[in-house]
Length: 286
Ligand code: ADP
Image (cartoon, rainbow, N blue to C red):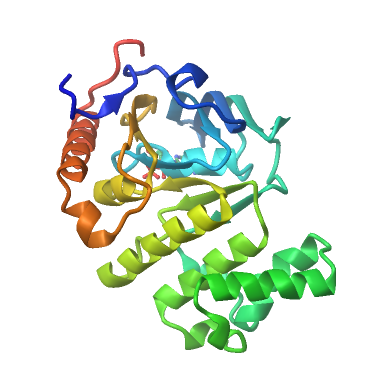
């Protein structure tokens, strides 16, 4: 390995505490397996996934289409039963949607209530969490300001562009002050320019709020631009192909970072891994 080559963890071996700077574990996924059982047939979506995410980390997950990325996020979010294995959030086993998690989905159009204003949409989970009125107002104001939507608070989602609607969904997740924020291909349905803006928004919020983020994408460049680590998944039944450390500076920008030599190397490496995954390559330990 040359000095400039990506820092890699051995294929199939999860990144352990000794591999990275210390920090409390926020999310612990251990031996996760998911088999879908339908009428007479079985689909083994996830074979065996083990990894940790430390508090305040931003971890991206990439892999071929059908690799089980959405399945993984739904198992972690308690929206789908696991076949075996464990998901532990802040020391407690996840058995249903945990109070400490928020999820941003791809389909912003379906995740917002059209009859509610932007403010009401962002406020709703806080009401369900029984946060008092004054605190709710403060959290909503802060979240709307952070995503640049203060002026749109009284509008309805259908009066906004797709990118703005996704900002509302992000504001709603952030206002909730989750321990872990799960994002499932959140920018797949917006145009390229909006996507770049939203990527920068996620980086900005992550750095400002110190929230732990698990970000699923099929876009290799996006994963390298956003993440501190990129977990590359094999094709189905899914295992981790590699846990790639993204050693780019924390200060990132769309032009400078993406045109840097290091970004190119990391992108190239992750691209090759995903190509291998598509061809069915699996780690020896599988
Ligand atoms: P990705 O998000 O990586 O594209 P998914 O998690 O959506 O992958 O799907 C992983 C695999 O599980 C795919 O082969 C998919 O067809 C299968 N799958 C997903 N949902 C179901 C389901 N409800 N019933 C049966 N198979 C499913």
